[in-house]
Length: 221
Image (cartoon, rainbow, N blue to C red):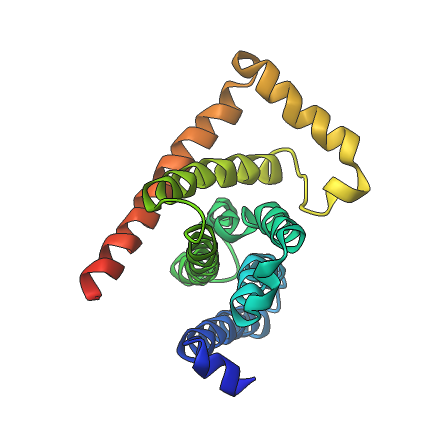
């Protein structure tokens, strides 16, 4: 595995993301031991869900033969899109910040931001992999436009996860109810101003961050 990671120039990235993940887990474990409260242990599960999109695209990059099958690519892209909103979703866990808690608010802020930052990195790194795959058949300008659009799709996913409490796997367990909730908001947008307000502004924010990453990446080359 190490040899494959080196060949595909993924060793440093994999190691770095592993360290960040362990650091986040360490923060949450320290809080649990120090405060005797498990209130923020759920962040580890949210981070695992954020890891899935990156794991899917990493598999496609490390096993390039998978990209030769259109069916496999479609399944990969569909699965990735289903789980991608989990990556930026952790940002909304800032809602759980409380001034009066068993720990100083500054520690809880650092804790949540650490998880949110790591989740965002998993999401953006996986999106770069998707762009790499798409660039084989799509012009770069269209790839960028698709990425921008995916940020808004991800923001919509954040909304239905945070406020409607749908999970990624509900597409299998309760598909009709999920489709109804999504369809209602698409067909009757003016009846759901909060849905589209959050989707638009969260989408703009994610694009700000993502395009900033792209600028930094190009400048460092």
